[in-house]
Length: 437
Ligand SMILES: C[S@@+](CC[C@H](N)C(=O)[O-])C[C@H]1O[C@@H](n2cnc3c(N)ncnc32)[C@H](O)[C@@H]1O
Image (tube, rainbow, N blue to C red):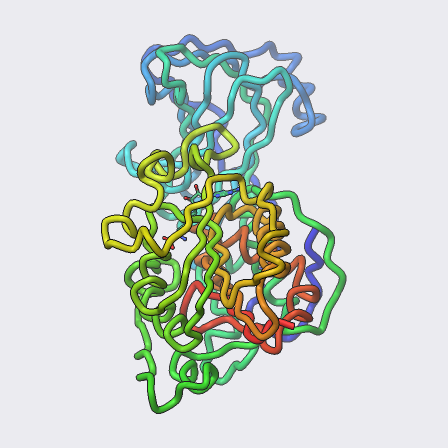
């Protein structure tokens, strides 16, 4: 696990504490779902061993239609009122899904607005524990169990345990770097933000243990970027962007920063991990004379559940469509492969001036892409990671930066040692390594 070393920084969200009495015992039953409540003996047993038991509190079967509601547990209003305004909640659900796919989500009193992300549990012989994060517990009134199977099968499941934890200060907080005076982010603080945000996502990526560290990551404000890039006087500083980092969009918010960066560095040879539709490659082609290599999975990316992550717009003819439409096809070499299988040897002899790392966003892929990037970037060259954002709020709402920040934190010393400067551009979702060694 991430080492949550103490240090005097503002971001100090505490880890969750169990609260009792939030979830009422009896669920509402919807759509005439068949329900079986176990015997009194099991209830007695559960009172003795309330959590780690394999005995179901209730067994139920949903209707066959996708999204049909089966059970909803009312959340006790008085317990919710006892929370501080900035507390968030985690509800842990231990379930066994015998057949189908089970959706678990907190909903509002209207029975339709979501008060959490929905978790999906697939049929499995073993019980699993999933955590539902409620950023704004006051908006929740029920914990809902519904049919997530898309093929018209009913979902059969048992609920083995439910318990709630509050995350003190888990809703509104300020990280120390958000103060303009902060010129760097202590890595320990980044580790705490990562551990906290990982909890809100139910730890989506395996984490490596981290040693306590006094290292910190430099911050460069957009106003200072021209001078850091050696183009002060030629490039206009980019004005401060008032948008919340959690709502950031590459095309609107990071594009002007990347444009300034690529113009200033003026690569002749550029490599990009992750083409998608070719927005990033088009940007480089437009503002530089570079020859560009860009690579993408030929069939696009799927998540752990096998579902496509980009609605298939990252496969086949969609890949690189924008740079072709903009007339840059002759300068762009499209490589179709899994970046983890990318053979760097031909490029080590003729390295790149710049590399953009923006392919798979799980920590293992980011780490592998970076290792390859470092093999093929020339001495003095530049590496840029997209989707690096240290803001805890952003990390709790967007999975891509969570993976990139985890890779950066876990590999910080190795990455830092390979550049003259490694810095986050404030505000952006961009990390820059300048002057590769
Ligand atoms: C965020 S998008 C890239 C956006 C693009 N760089 C831009 O600036 O417009 C990530 C892309 O990486 C691809 N990808 C994900 N994992 C990959 C892997 N292991 N190897 C190659 N490409 C991968 C996905 O298919 C997707 O098209």
